[in-house]
Every structure is written in C-alpha cells, then in structure tokens.
Amino acid sequence: MIATEAVLCGASDVRITNSDGWISVSADLDWLADFGEAVFSQMVPFPPGGPNGITAEIFPVIFARAGGTSASGDTTVVKGESQGPLVGERAEWARSVAFEVAPE
Image (cartoon, rainbow, N blue to C red; front, top):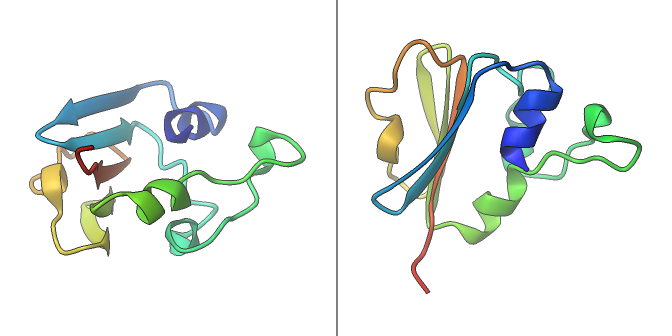
C-alpha cells in the first residue's frame, strides 16, 4: 500500500527491499511531502487513493518493532530506536520509509 501511494503521487522509480528483517520502500519523489509526518501517528486522508483513501504508513507503525523515514537527507525514527537500513541512505531517494517486522 505504501508503494502504491508513491506511484499514485507521481513517483516513477519505487523500490521495495526486504533485508535483515526490515522492509523498506524508497522512491524518487517524496510522496509524503503534502501530508507531513502525521502519517506516522494517525490516519490521514489520501485523496489520490479515492474518496475513502487514507495513508498506510500508520499500519506498520502499529505492528512493526521499529520504523523510520528519510527525506531530504534527514532521518527520523518513528517507532523504537533503530534507523535500520536508513543509516547511510542513498541520496538519490527523495523519500524512504523502513519498518522492522517481528518474526512470527
């Protein structure tokens, strides 16, 4: 759902990676620029997703062990203490979000 948000907002290069228990979504466009950091703490309307669209970033915040986001070179931890794979994030990504998934 998060990758779909990036595409609906106009990103042309969206990557999903799964490494060492972390899932990351990165894009060449900051799809959250118009929505702000509130997407990590509450459901936020997402008009590109249709009349009932909401941003999806709140769901992994609720269920993941840790998570963070990176935009314009600044990394913010949104849950837990680890930045995970966002440490040393590649500069070509306008926005990345990453969440550590708990093993079953």
